[in-house]
Length: 80
Image 1 (spheres, rainbow, N blue to C red):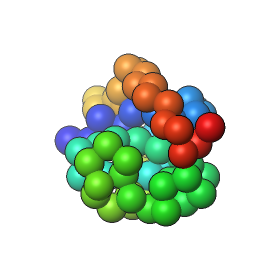
Image 2: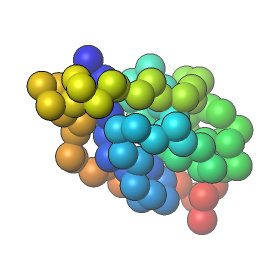
Image 3: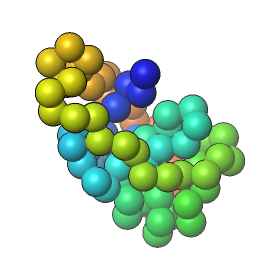
Image 4: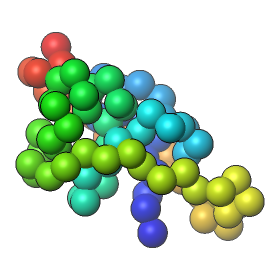
């Protein structure tokens, strides 16, 4: 199950579970759409994988399967 991390690990922008602006790779590295497109051209700077739109978990499922609250922050030079 996806962790649905709460933030962009580059710029620390909040990315709530319902956000259409969240992008992830197959390792669940999480970025906002702006960093994913502008800074990384759709390629994960950590693993080299493709950054794609993160699915939205239905609100009814969040009660039993909540999003992660752990913030990951690894600022990258490309977003500076």
